[in-house]
Length: 353
Length: 265
Image 1 (tube, rainbow over the protein chains, first blue to last red):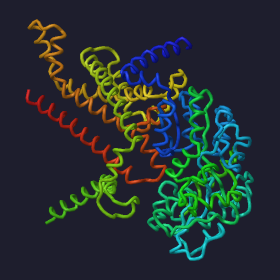
Image 2: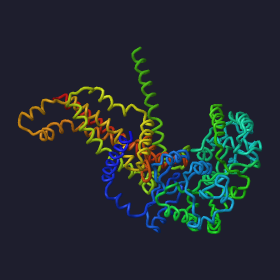
Image 3: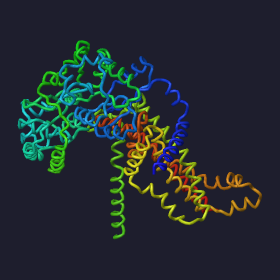
Image 4: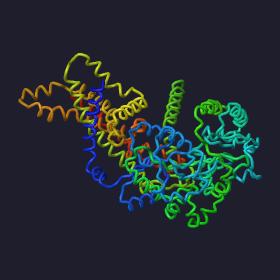
């Protein structure tokens, strides 16, 4: 069996050599220059920033994209990939740390990461900040259209208002929706107590008939086009929506909410670790982050950049709300097997019309 | 009277089916020309989304990746497939039908199973994921299509011409070069176009076996949707659709032409 396998490996590698040969001399040249392989979300950087980095460090950046954390995890676990910088979200950092997939970060080689806001340096998903640094972050809040909703919502309970029947949108994510309902009842959004989850589920069932859609991908469009009046949204998306429809407003309800982050991490065995460290360090340079975050439209965690940003960006009501109220947020953490409780109820919830 | 009623129903039914098939694509295309960033509202005609695609480095990179992978896949699978089809056609041996159905199998196996099994294979043997693995995977599923297309052309062609060439002292190579190859060429081109189309379009298998520097257009579109559906995605999809449809049409025309040619013989 072993023989067969090695025979197979041999023939496969021969074939690979052949295929690589067909790839042409361009690939061979690339090997000489340094290469940084990034695996991230789509449109997560200002393209100019990547170009500047390539120029400054005389390297080539390969920017590949994934659409969700689970996809990232699967690719990393397959072991075949060779990425140097990855961008897992909060809870995925915990999962990957547990599975031993991440390299410990040497922050002495990335002095600029000290510029990150204190509150984002120590998070529950990575308590000592050993494996990840926060790149983009935001909070889940209530987004609403002031044209249709005259009194500003203050509580999650306002989503249940019967006047908004058929105009409510919830994020298409089980942890977000249940986290919201758990918060409404004063529980943690990481609750693993079946009784609390049941309470949240029973409550959500009464909201379900009012829901227009569970949507994450085209939620901005639905608010801009005023199909939806009120719903849950991430602060970064609220910033975008507000730009296209000035009637949109955003609040963090008094019961508290979920705070989330996408991070930088280096996978175990990364081939170009040094360049990866240089890249992460580069992105937290104040001038670079000004360019970068104003392009992608998420809260800049860089404290040194605050004075350099355009006034319209730093004082944007949506982004400012998140900064001011970060203490009301609770991070989502890996809740282990309890996730099956959420998933079961989630499936049922989505079938209620 | 009854006849006109019948044909009217039939026409309406046909139209309904066509609408069902093509309406979504039509709407997608239409909104790629919409001036507004929001899909929901039509505000005016524009080509700016197409222009912005041309300046988007990521899109161009994904396009280059797709073209590199599709070109190599096409060349390799066409050459391999043609020879395989010739061998299968020419020699009689035991288990011939069995072998033939084995070749059809990759077409029938769900793509997701194929993608997953390839991923497991690559990671078990320690082959790093990237363009090479992507190309190997694409060749795997394109091969069957080439063999079938070329095989069909061979079935419809005449073997006696090659024998006649042999009688006239043509070497086997000459017989192949001047008799067999021109005869099956339409089939080969149709197979190659098919392979190219399949490779450019493939998402599921690529999703599993792609690695660094091998994000293809379909993979990129999928990840882009996560950021919200923009007219840029519509424009990109429309471009891909146009290319695919024209390739399929060309391939069909070639097959039709070869069918008529063989009828004339």
